[in-house]
Length: 346
Image 1 (tube, rainbow, N blue to C red):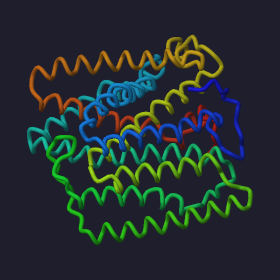
Image 2: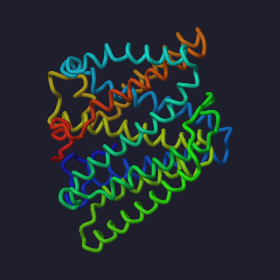
Image 3: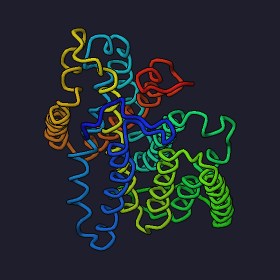
Image 4: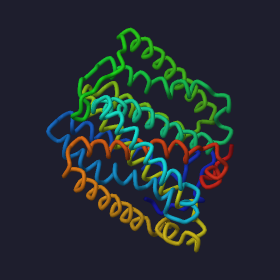
């Protein structure tokens, strides 16, 4: 994380924090994700080692990052008590019912489609923050960007469904049957929308009104989903690309949110979180989250792996699904408190 101050903004460019930070956030993270996928494609035997690195440094860490919003201070805990104490019981009951009532394959199938939707929606949320940072450079009624944004990931998941690989991350997978014609129709529509969007951005650039940060972010979104779901043949290697991208993006964005929230300094009402969220303590923030995630997941592995594989998989999926639900509730950019912290307008 860079030491660039929160006030280092370029209204025309629409950076979240400043050029160095945003290039790391957009281009750097996307490059790491694509490199991870490329390495696995060239040497499939490296999938497990890279997956373990991804899970330990990013995956587990990104889940714990959510809890910095939920329970690292008293005010957040009171506001999100049900999400912390009630919702997990509902999710684990649903997961257990699916596994023991239908079969273990339901977890892989639900995970494939839900994570695709979750990753797409997170990316949309980030893109909307960049759009609002761009001010009036992007017309409020622009629709082609949204159409292109969603059509390409839709094309990708339809292709994976048509591909029907049979397994996903070592688990039995049953997909929604999708005819090849449907894949091609959506693909043509996605490419047409993407071409139209690119043409509008070229026109903006010629007029000297290009929203730079938003445009770069949108391009990274298209590239990541194209490689993850369409270009890379292996469903596991493709998933690794989008998973690394999503995890790292989430970790940095949550840190940015917490850093913005406490930009005035340490808050006595949230002393621990506000202390580790200061720019000078970025290393401490990362260390705390990694320490908590490592301890928590080691405990889960120790307890549940001693029972059987099925309970272990079920508990991991419970954590994932709970995380998806929580994120859909706490990160709505249209909410005024979120806009205030991120420094954006409606």
